Image 1 (cartoon, helix red, strand yellow):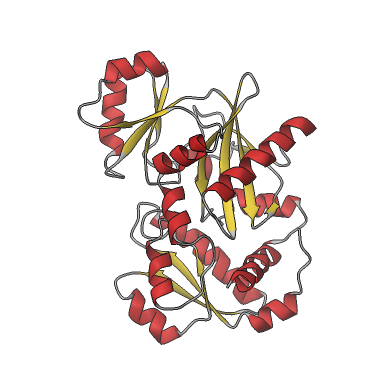
Image 2 (cartoon, rainbow, N blue to C red):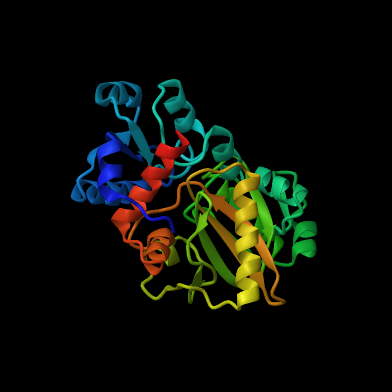
Length: 312
């Protein structure tokens, strides 16, 4: 990673506001991420405020007059281009990807369409609706992963193996988003790669005793194992790095992001999704991977700020 001048960044970044909370289904995780970021910036001497984003966000921002907004909002309203567009209208520089890249990455169907057009490997998928032939889809996929098209933190996601379960999970996932998809289940190992501009963090590998890396495995189950750096051969690591970079650049991402990938039992990698605002909790991949690279949490945040200063 690039060498940073801590004192220069803190002096030049001005007043930073951390945006957290919001009204999406991922609000609670966003509150944790935002508070962790706020406390660390406060600790290292940044002039920082924090806002729980609500109906008065425009007035709040106009009162605070920040020089930079550090977005820690997960899910709809924060990760889909909405808050990014608002900040652009208010002429407030912000962290992470712009409006279009945020919207594309948030929509798992649109991002997969782009990746497939670019020749990047992604698991087969189908958008679901009330008229879906549940049995025909199970016959085709055998095992499917049902998930909201726009969402994260593994909320509303389940693995299904029969038509009745597929239909039921569609109805449950619809509570999290108006659009739901089924993805052909890739059986194998799960990896995630943090990206900061043109730099990659060490790859993390997930091991869980649960059926898959669900919400509880991410945030509650202490038995979940995160291996960083991942157990990959040199050739596999190069292939995964190239795939992660291509996924990031093809959507036009900027700043910090995280690419989630599965590797099947034959060794092939499949893109799952790209998160433009990765979690920053104690269980989150990006801080863990940064620490493995010798970057403490404070310097990770300063790197993100410095990158936004360069871009803006």
